[in-house]
Amino acid sequence: MKEKLTQYVNGVFAPYNGVKSVDELKVDLLSDLQERFSELKKEGKDDETAFEMTIYSIGDIEQTVQEVANLSRSLERQVLTNFSASNLTNSDFVGVTAHKGKFVASALHGSDFSGADLTGSLFNSSDVREANFDNANLTDCNLSAIDLADSSFNKSILVRTDFSKSWMAGTKFIDVKLTDVKLTMTDLRKTIFENCIFDGVDFKYSDLTGLCLDGQTFIGVKFDKAALKEVSFRGATLKNVSFISGFTLSKKYYRAIKSICFDGAMMDKLTYAALRGMEVDLSKVTVI
Picture (cartoon, rainbow, N blue to C red):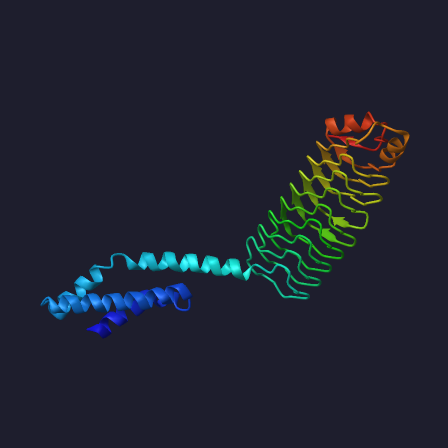
């Protein structure tokens, strides 16, 4: 009958084999059940009655085992996704799920994160040159103050992602919707944006000198106190976009703001009025 107890316990724990804390629980439980069975036998219970009473005494053990397994797996994932201060050059992270992963101060040069779910992960102070984030989910990720030169974010999910103060020469954003993304205090002169939608993006204090943003959409975007000399918005759509200067409107600022090209752009009345007040050439703009 003790063998029957062992078979019963093995059946309950079968879905969780290999989970360390669950394996330990299994050994302890089996020992307790066998002891309880022996006590009931000494009291004069027959085998079947003793078995039934033993199993009944542990209650809903399946739910308890599942809770222990879930907790254990959660803790294991936390350990597995802490790669801080690691050498991970050219690593393969394609399609992984690493919520709140830690890649702080790590070497990630050339690593492939394409299709990965990295929600809430941290990459501060890391070398992420030439990394591939195509189709990756970077919601609530912190990629500030890191080297992202020549990295790729084609069709990535960028929601509340922070790129502030990062080096982004040659970094590519293609077919991306950037929602509430921070690109503040960043040198973007050599960054590539193609076919993007910018919704609530903050470019404050960033250098966009000479940047081509033709044909792209800007909704609720802030270019406040940014360097915008010779930026091109040809054929772009601008709604509720802010171009506030960080200083008194000097001749230098007037020259810079008037160098922006809005030919063929469409913009709402508020954006149009603000730019018109700065004497920007809007002769080829359509007001919507």
